[in-house]
Image (cartoon, rainbow, N blue to C red):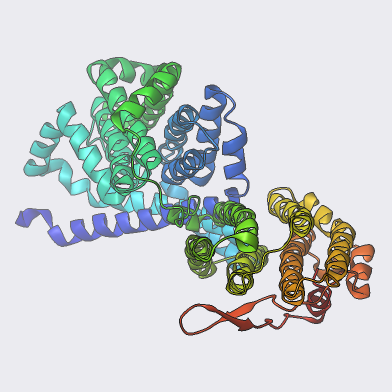
Length: 610
């Protein structure tokens, strides 16, 4: 061991590996930031059949260089019912193919140009201050660092060529099963199959491993990349476990098929790879084997996909039996779309936030629809039981806010920061609707029940009509999160809702002359109900305005002249009493408290009640 110079060897390997991994992180981070936009939309729309699903999974993974992120996206879609497990299988197979791009890049022997790439990337980052160009510079610089790190490792391992213990170790690694184990372990340690394949390609370029051994190690890398996903899925939803299980099953079965056919796969790789017959044996092996291993790695995943894609339905049924449906009811207060893996890809994180906020809004609509009849004519027990149901929505909103805070600490470009601010505002408006019902309507209902009064059938019918129209507007504002042009429809609904509110107030005023001794109490409570419904539309309209501003990215001037005039004229009817009831120290509804509007325009809306 004294003859080997351990210090320089370890320093070269560890230092080179660190530079390589840092460069790989720069490349993948830049690709995620630049290529993330619309990736989730691509996955959702290009899964009409199994072949498009494979294509979408391959394209997305190649662009963001993370099969983990792709798999997490798929899990979210399956959990939300936006994608079937059979479609998800195709995407996961495609993600395996897309993940081979790193090995293909590393197989280019451009070590001599690594410093030029680093210099070029740094100059782009230093001279071009625009964030998008800075991302491109980081990608180029990252590529240079990857090649530099591999080159340093390659140079530092040169003495191992004649070191007996290392030669003996290579003799063991030529055993395919041991090579698979080594590949799996390296991948799990580095949390990246691309990094593991980069090391394999580097070792092949020095003549340390043969093509067949490199293929066996790549088999292990494919299995190793599944295990972290399996661990992450433990304790999660059934869909998470199924998706991770499909990934593992697909790769393990693929290895079992090709393990006895390694020589066949090697011959195919040699046939499609360039050859260098002008070099001597050692130099030829160093020049040809790295590309052959990269091609074999790609062939392995492509051929497996071509085989298993025909059995996607069978695999889905098998997974449904292996992972049976849980009898426990899922926790509705937990997010479905928000995943930590998206935080490195802002556009995907924003899309997940948009979907989770829309989900919170849909739950709020369901809560409001169930609340109105309970609050207007239910018993005290039913009123309190209904009020308790809002806690799940409150917890979901807190989870959304926690995710927003985490995302806000990321390195966001200006338009990402504006988008995050818009989504934060929309989430707040959605939650305000829920709080308006859970607090204000509960206070109204408890007083109604305490005074033993109930609105008549005709009044209930009139209030139900206004409530239905307001909920339609709120539903359209949620749809506008995914289809921005719909936002203008929400604002255009104001005259109709204002007219219905005015007609409802007229009806209540006519009923005020009734001889019923409790008529004045009912009138006050029924008027508060109208104000709460108007407040719901007020927040729906705020959501619409925020989406219009975000879609045009030019501030207040994007609002139509008619809409601004409508706000200024105050065409909304009723006041704003009861827009936000306070609670006492016990959490019971107390007196009415109007939160101050954030700006003058909002003050106009609040006075209008719409």
